[in-house]
Length: 413
Image 1: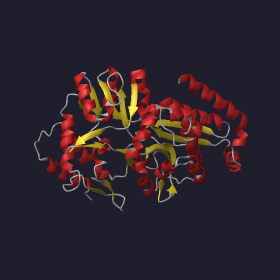
Image 2: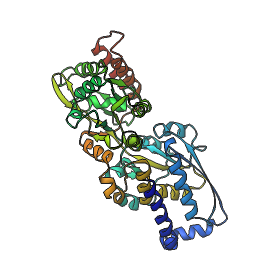
Image 3: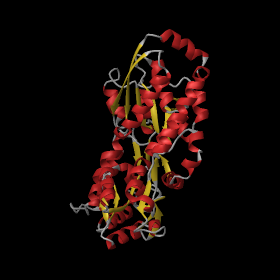
Image 4: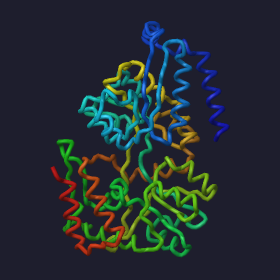
């Protein structure tokens, strides 16, 4: 992988040197001639684990536009999951270019934080339609698609689990217990907990106001009742072969050998392959037993996006940098270095991407996924409920009462 990365960088550099003048549009050349001698200070926010990659991409951007401006570009780590909250707390002091999860795009656009994409036709034609949809609000494009892989699926160690084992969550947990190992899933996050409710007919989502939620997870009359889901979760958590762990703790278990399967995303593909080698397996989520039937676990899906701050002092350069970070070449580099699935059509259709086990598992799970679209009141009540289930309902509160409390909190105005 390292060799491929170096080779790609050399090829890109040679190609860009040969055609740099031809690649720039007349408008860019005119803008650049006016910008010679200008000092351009930009701040880029990205995931902490992307630091090395983003710094490399920023260096290539500065090399490409060398001589057109005096660049002072700073990278700062910032979680993609709460980028919106940090940015809106100080728009003028925030990053010029920033990575964020697509479920934040509507709120950022409504707050006037995002600079709308000017070259929208080019961006739309270059990227997968699902990623373009995720970057849009009411049909207007507000961000540059970066990945099309912000979902989750199952990783498993083939030394302990077979392809048939991973079709059933209960079978996996039993096999882990027999081996003195653990199957991991994060029940502290409503992002993952949705997996149990998504294919049951019990619903959650945004109301038309775009802020508040509807939720029927406490349903008592449908084909699957909320209490049955709660009982299924408690049965799973009672096994010594299951552990409620955050993503960080899941990876620690992979590396120390205690965890043989877990639910996570492509961002951990490289590290898991390093730990398990040829024994690394990836598959869609399993089914679980609920109310005497098998239910395929669901998932939230989404994309990572790059936004341009509407308050940037250098909006044109910020937009160029966002385009550069999300270009076909750099999405290909991101896949090679971080294992993340490209939103760029050409990069996504490459043989290497199509053959990647994690990407294949994500595609298999996509049949049972939906874009994450929930308001802020969703998260805490779900965490409270799922934590109680993971701990075996230590308070003894009736499950229906806990579900009613969950729904009351999720749908609060």
